[in-house]
Image (cartoon, rainbow, N blue to C red):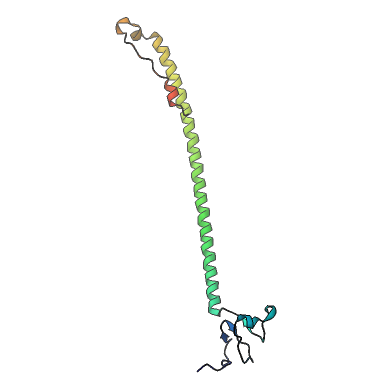
Length: 147
């Protein structure tokens, strides 16, 4: 047997997502009948598809989502900051290494020139008895420089 209509008076009775107004004998058959032409409710029917529990759940879900989004944005910002710091450190290290390359290149040129000057007057190299043919050496500076 079907329950009596209208349902007994209690806090906002519902029928298929519609809040039942007081003094109405027959519920609408569907949402469109409840809304009627022009979207306004007829006979005081109000389309309310969610119960208070659903509203609470939605509020909790939105709050949880908001907190998760904040956490995600914070994490992304921290990651970007860490990458920027790493970039700065690598730039400093790169500058320092380039200076060192410059100093070492200059030292290599100086020592190469000193060796060439020494070879011109070295008694061991000038003595005919110690003469050993020395093949020409490639330029040591050219092989060390970055391209």
